[in-house]
Length: 462
Image 1: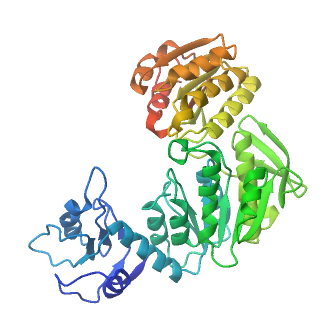
Image 2: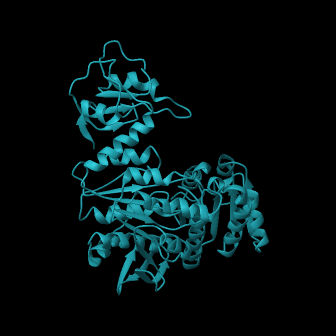
């Protein structure tokens, strides 16, 4: 994590510290959470929509904060002389500190964006690279204007690889994050319909994601999905080194013979079969994405294959669990049209293999804009095509999901629920002990509640 002096913080931030005498105390880390602050950390008072960090400055001081970075003088304990550094904008100060610390690091910085798969790719990369390098990543999906600086500031001074994830749901967010991270390698997993409500179109999504290249270090590499011609064509207009991965012959790094078989899959890279112990074809593409980055970092293909073979499932991302004779596919971390289509494909393959009854607990997909109803009807059609025999849809677009399924010839059991709570109350009426159940929806649906309900149903509990 960042380690510096109080005086250096003042200089980097051009902060006003006149209200308190300043010594040359050491600062060991940055936090925005007064509940988790450690002695000698600097507390940054961030103002959010539902909270104001300035209200917790006194608590941070009592916990031994080295200083408080604030936009105005907060109420402080009378028995403490914790320095307060006044800045114009605490979120901007966080970014400024991260940019400064990034320049102090000798680590290779990797920044990942895309409409789907970026968190999984980051986890896979950390799993592989930590075998060969001191690799650091955030504990969660810290991919916004606060999370990216915190990820950088939490990196150990001696880390060799720093993994960052850049997300967006509005135009103009990726480029500033990329300039903070200043990556040596930037990666775009894929372009698909996500956050259309604010980004408007696939073209706008492509332009927004590709703006990650504007933050690349001189001589850095942009690694992109070569199976997407529009992305490749646009990337060629950017002033940077480009490498492509994919399954087509024109890609620089090619994956062949992608086979998804229930809980695992394989693909062939440079003549070698790579086992990926995760479900779904998308995870095979994710593995290929990871290899394209590892290859750039001189990881041997044999070492990559060995590391991938003992990969563990990631929580709430097509994580498979057996409960008695029931199989549960927990993919409720988030949802987009691309990731949901992949999850349904996985459900179809596994149900066919195990001969279980396919049940789809479908939450609404968020931030899709004017085309949301149409995309949810398409989701229903995909559910019908996947052989789902019981469709339980909840949320604002539940009726569109069921309508789309019916239009595609679905004649199984279906039910519409307004809320996740209503769904949970009725799950016992639909779930059978030997089902295979996919639970998938956006974070706003909070479908982890449905997962827990299924696990504890008397009919399925072992």
